[in-house]
Image (cartoon, rainbow, N blue to C red; front, side, top):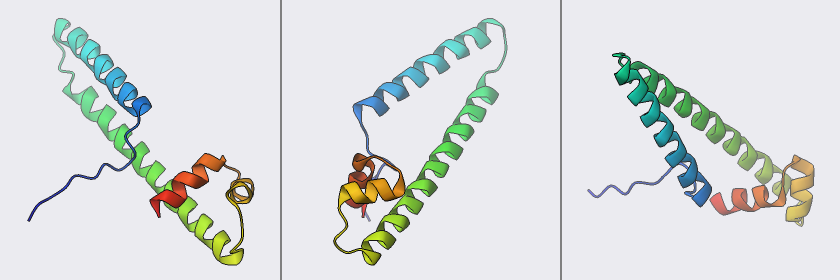
Length: 102
């Protein structure tokens, strides 16, 4: 069986930049901890735990957005993206991404 990795979100240049920034920051903090003879592994584990919690929360919000979007489309089959965005209080681009993910 072949396993194909599917990232939990769209990989954008902004996301790549953010991950690079986080990596550099962890590197600097690890270097400081090493210079102070402190094990930085605990901090890195804590940081990744918080990142995981935030990503799970974002996925939950995204799932709720999908459900709300589908409900509105079901109730109003001719609703436009702009109308969906207004009804849900989000940008039109958010609705476009939600529809693309369905």
